[in-house]
Image (cartoon, rainbow, N blue to C red; front, top):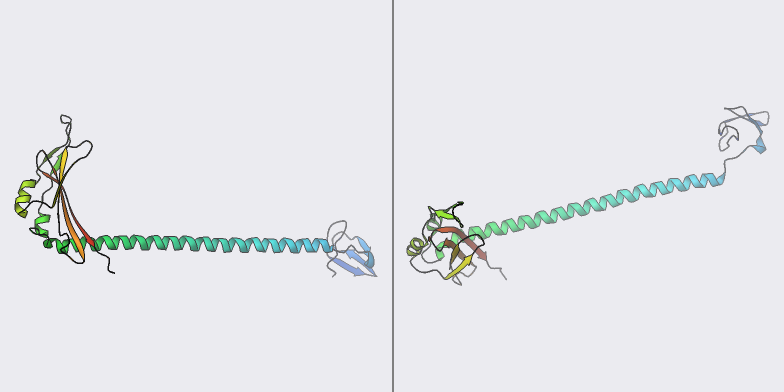
Length: 204
């Protein structure tokens, strides 16, 4: 069997040598051996070039996909670490505040937890919300034993004027600060919100 030769009639590439002639196995076309139509070198190089190009495209795609996938994994990992770090910091601050609330004169965790916030009722007959069943700020102030370190007023759109009272450890603690914020309705004196916050100083 002879290869690297193609038949001009049928394009076959399988030939039989017989009596100095080459006979196409498919269409029986006969050729003198020296006149047999050889496969063009140009066609061979084109086939090789196409194969190399295809291989290059496949390799490029695989490498690009690997880099992009690695980048996405890296970004996802960094976001998870930042989220975990932020959650851990918030948890530490909350724990710090709960553990040191008694460093604020007149306060304890039990007293803070026992503060009853008012229920808000929205009525079509009233322009502003109606509050009920909330602890009165004056009773809390009397229980603490002294006026707040800071007392401000604020009006939230659609609500009545609110008072915002703050008690804090100030600079009493060396490693951080604890603050209690109480918001109450100025008209009825009922407590609307309470917040216990901790701030841990960075260690140098």
